[in-house]
Length: 571
Length: 40
Image (cartoon, rainbow over all chains, first blue to last red; front, side, top):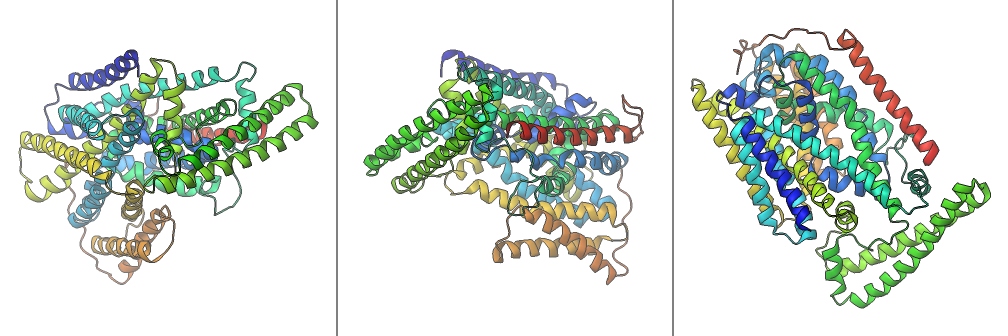
């Protein structure tokens, strides 16, 4: 990286941290720290988007489009519907009760044990996720740039802890506004620069058509294909469930809109996300498509994780790999010729030549895919611990190799800003939940505001250290990211189920709801061990089990437990 | 904190604004479908 890149990268990150600390230096009450106050809808909307946009969004999603096309955008089709449902159902309830956390509502509706159970389930899943938010970008960037993994973890974690502890929810929202501006500007600039790097005689429209000929332009699939993870129908149903659970019951998101100046501001922030999220994801995927089109004319590496490829070249498999790489080069040349022919046919509007070139391009791509698979097999033999899924490295390796000085620093700032913004929300939410739902509720109900403020800061530091320790430990465990995703799915559905029972099954009392949550959680865990069900389905199964079991238990438990007295406001 | 039902800054009522968000979703899906028809 050049000096200019370092200046832009460190300058951007330092500005965000200093600005966050300075802007929130007056935060002096627990209410301000835990919930934030007086936020306007643009801040809320950007904060919600920044919380969801982790570094993996920018590392993985373009690579996903490169490998598999744009179908992933359908995953978000349920999100605008979820935003409307949350505005209609969730937000008025949270505002009416003036809760600090989503789980405080459960005590009002049920009792303390249901509240504590939901809070604990959230803390297990989100606590691990906070570590991954730091670890995932650190492992990829440290590998490609030769930076120390532990130094990166320490730097990112410390910066996030600094401003999160300083200004709480308000600092998180204020810094996320800046981070989201950097992120959106970086995405737009990256798209323009990649388009500019295409060959002179290849327009963006032609490049898109070439990528489309190889199956990369596929944002909508209306088929009822249950083997395909991303279709219109799975997005509009499964995506709706996930978005409802995440935005409606996960404290890291609920905390973002509870700090609004009014209920109207909170609703507008959520709807802002409902309108902008899908175009943003579409643009990130489109960047991946443009990178794919770029590599139709410029030979890509046979494997995008450079350090692992180099290790394989130096191993006993080196000579065999060299032979495969030579074939990779000649096969690439054949594919490039077909791409040039198709671009010419499209320009001439020659249907016969276009059909012939399309068939030739598809055949060349199939051959190239075969050579890449051979290379991956050799790499696995050479480096048995290597992760063969290299799509997370596609975009960042493109940035490092082809973007001009200055923009490399900006794009790395985008990735690290995304990592910091999602981690800050998670630490802020974990600290709040620990203090409000456990510490203050169970052990120090009469504590002063000053005591609660100090405890909140200490618990935020505690969760920050846990996340950093987990990120450091994560390097020792294989497939940890997938393990954490599975763990999250195991708990997420049950939490959503508890909230849906609370909202819609008014006749269900506390004890049946609590027992149903325990039964459902046990059932999901058993299913995980004895079945081959895809882990995303645990969200739906866990939710359905809680709702079904709660209704059934209430039917055989006529009295239930008495409805508790309403909570006082500000708990 | 009270929970006043302030009207949204545009369209007058919340149901109309919700309908706009859902209409926007429908138009985006239609746009993606057309995008795929042209370039896919």
